[in-house]
Image 1 (cartoon, rainbow, N blue to C red):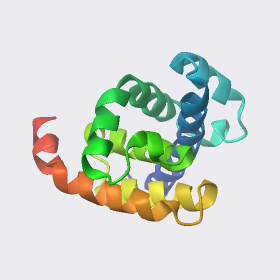
Image 2 (cartoon, one colour):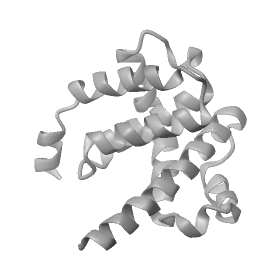
Image 3 (cartoon, one colour):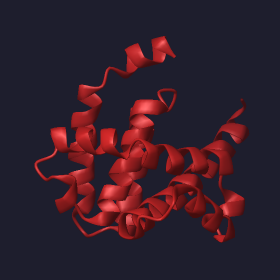
Image 4 (cartoon, rainbow, N blue to C red):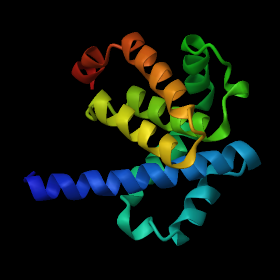
Length: 150
């Protein structure tokens, strides 16, 4: 893919992550059905700018794997998931899903996107927890091996 195509895909994925963060926040608070959430976000102003398939993968996958994702977060965080602010938790769940399942996406991109979203929507210092947890998760997962196996 050329540089213009790469930038366009990157921007679409940024918008998809933004919507996924919001959907995961909503899911955390309401326990709403994952497919219903995906349908609801098709009305969002960012939907046309997003990659709908990637958004759906992030939301459906994060919810489906939430027990495993939360176990991994609990395993490296000094705070359990029930003590983490819902915005930071939503960012961690989406980013952890990407770390585990989207091995073609560089770790730096996943981390920087999660931090960017936390700075925009989360508490003043919440991005620091997200950064520390994701750093520990990256050390835990052998993504190079995961990439070879995919």
